[in-house]
Image (tube, rainbow, N blue to C red; front, side, top):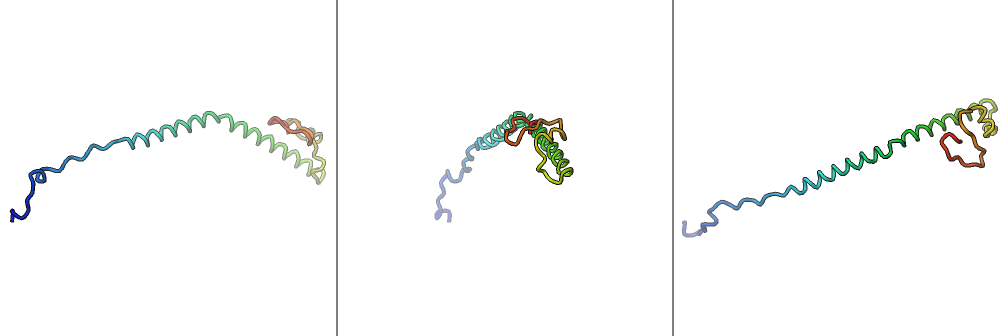
Length: 108
């Protein structure tokens, strides 16, 4: 029976060791995560003052809405809520005529 199957000495030896695996994929993923985190930190600190600006604008708009509501309650209409009347009702804001555009947060 040994004559039927001839096995070479190389086939009887241990199989070759697998080639060493590269860890390139690990470094690509790790590098992408680090860069993404750094980008997020830069964006957070670059836009840090934006939340204060938005909060200030929201406060001014709420004050303007409250002033207009007071005029509406007094007159029954918003027709009398022009810049002169609103400046009397809410003097902390600067009021412009309807034909002018506002360029500041406290100027409505």
